[in-house]
Image 1: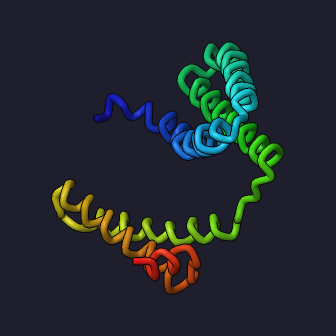
Image 2: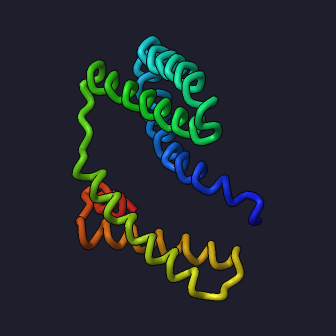
Length: 159
């Protein structure tokens, strides 16, 4: 309700943290640790902890919740970037950024679906399921027909 309107900006600040935590988990828990690079992931985590402590001490008193939100965003970014750095350096793993950009471009189609859903008077749960199904379909259709994703084509031919 209106009593929580002051929290909107803080939540907008921390929204990218969801993405950063996912990247950090991918690089750390899915690549570094199984690859035997626990020390490097520990370093990334401890670096994040140190930065978090320092920035929280500096920013919370002056900026309250916004200072904590900025600290969280910076900290998760540092942890994710550091883990990514070690993945590149230690594992000689090369990211196929063109595939990532194609995935990002295909996911932009979710925005019109969400905007369309707001114009309907559909109940929340059925509307959510409709948006999910339509978004998944649009994503795969775009990947298959527009970007001609070789991984998706191989999966479909395997079926």
